[in-house]
Image (cartoon, rainbow, N blue to C red; front, side, top):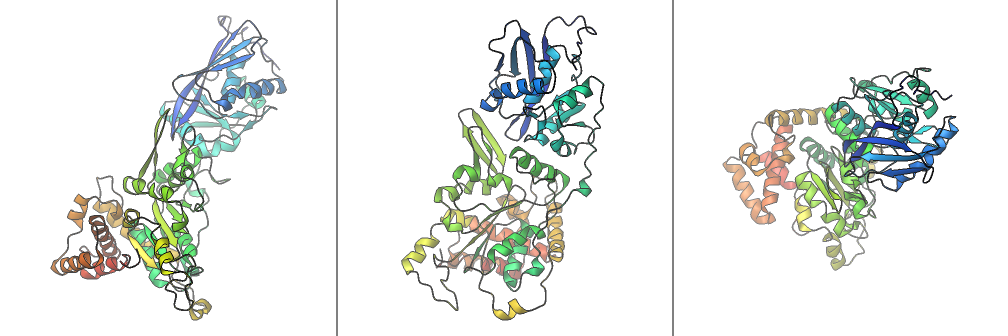
Length: 521
């Protein structure tokens, strides 16, 4: 099976080869040169330098076995592999395939220029088959940006890289298949360009299936229209989780740019659903309250995205809100304001996007029935107060909408009539978001919840009657400056849903009713 290309290229005396690979740092790809040099000697058989981690070092065994089990010749020389630049940390198994090809080129079994304009990535099995890797989308994006004409990727990951129409994607099933392709014996058909319209959309809960709770549905519609954070408080079984899972069905559809932004995060986190190379539905993340700090914000020896980054452009749902650790909850304060999360390690600092909509649910007390009309609460008053105060005031202040979710009575549950469908609610939300996009055209803002004090002053002006109402509310509800601005943003969203160019007392009154009662927190 071996062909000595030194016969065709007699000038290639040095046993040196270079193959282009890629590292992923945070969410961005970085080109890595895989340099392979063969020198006399057999011990140690292969040396890898260039700041590799343990998984890269392990590629020595995988590469040797894959080459031999493919029927190719592994050189009886000392193999030195340099991953340049040496200042960039290399992790993962994506370097297996480029290292193997570099060895074959240096050993004159492949032509020197066969991969000159290509980027190679893939993990090798011991039998030479090519396995799935994470982070293919950012790797393909940097290949396109750096002017590469084609990329060789595992066949399983080829649809993910085929989103770029001007980049040729070659799906690779095995090292043997790729070897035959590179020497011209077999032609691998390039992966067809991904048709975005044909990508499957995940099934979502429809609002028409939710009985009763009309005021909560209205609050969720307002939250979706302006990207506001929302907290639901009610007894167990009232439908809080069901309504939370229905929220993504009324959120605006993602643009292609937003889909790529979200898919890139899921690609790096290796969290893409099977068979879905591009995410078209907004993310909905619902971590358990036992999640660790690193699991929520991201972390690891070399940080990877956490749940708040996986919820980027979508919803982060925290059920049993007070049961989360206080340190875990307090870390949400910075990303809720800045829309990013910064993680610092000794090796460096990485920033992940975290522009999510917070949706939380909680019981009013440990037993869940404080204030319930039909079932008595068994908690002592001090226990109720302590439970509710597990959530700090500064964090509560960052939640725009607080809504109570009472139990649903039998008449509403047994009613055969369906509620208003999500498609109707989404149409109203889309209209309100379009108004906001036109309002903030030329800026980085996309929704009312993103407004800064300057924009609040410009777009949330009040008439005399509204100012008097706001003044009374500030005194009675003991509102902070942050809460004052959040109420105005919320009133602006309610006005947008009504198609009103200005905020009236009706819009402001509805916004004020979404604030928590002073006695509760």
